[in-house]
Amino acid sequence: MSKRHSARAVFRPPSFKPLRRSLAVPVWADVALRLGGAFFLIFVVIMVHWSDRAGLHDVHDGQVSFLDVVYFTMISITTTGFGDIAPVSDRARLIEAILVTPIRLAVITIFVGTAYNFIIKRSWESWRMKRIQERLEDHIVVLGFGVSGSEAVKELVERGMEPACIVVVDPVEARLAHAEKLGCNVLQGDATRDDIQNAVRVTTARTVLVSAGRDDTSVLIVLTTRHLAPTVPITVVIRADDNELLARQAGANNVINPVRFTGLLLAGSAEGQHVADYFSDLASVAGRVQLVERPVAPEEIGRPLDQLATGGKGLRIYRGEHTIGFWEDDASILQPGDIVVEIAPTKATDEAGSA
Image 1: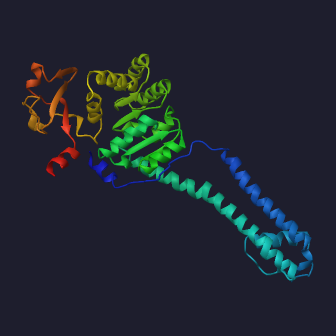
Image 2: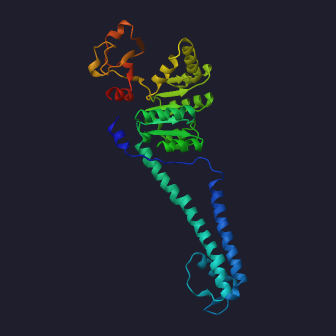
């Protein structure tokens, strides 16, 4: 993990929504509805003042014209109150207290709310999004937060990944709300779009996890990601066997088929009752052991695969384009650049042993 990444880990936006990509009505229509409601209330007050103009007094000429009513309404609604026109009768004062004052508060609330939503809030969120984008580097991008995506994020957090270093993209706001509770950065939108993936900076990501729920959508997302980030590792969930090749051709480094994996577990369970449990144990950090893939350590170079410095059980070596099992002769000497896959005890196992 880079120094820059470590410094960024302190920055945790637990409830950050950079953008909103879908609205019930267009922005201009929302503004028009708000302003229309405010001016309608002002018109109601003008009509009330005009109907009760006899209770108003103009200190300049003693006459209250329609223009004077409009003027008095505006300075009354805005709480300016110059005092040149004032309610003098008991009825006029009662109308001001009971009817006009609540409308005045409603109009002010509409104007302030509109200014906050369309000026202050958007400017603030844009600034925050820009700041977070500047800090995004060596992060994990999760495109799709359904069952598979949410479980992946939970497992990453349990393994020690800072939630602030995970960015979740999904079109469903309810799913994003769940991701926010975990502490992740979220973006609502269509992950097949270039602008969405650019917004979460896939080009500087450590890895991209794709689980869109549909194979066609997942493959299209992989194509978009590979186009924008040619060297970033991509893992995708594909449910149909005949789509796995398409996903690899689209640029995915790893293709996971949950249906096939479930079948393997079922078949293993047919041969023994503990095989499926052990598979689940290996896949999760919450179990007693876990599968770990890592570069060979400097002190391990020259050793055999069964003598790892971590004390784990070495299973496989990835040496360039070659895959070497623990039973093969080439596994007797670890070389620089090797990638080791081992079974290692988890922290829970270590704590239980020390206790």
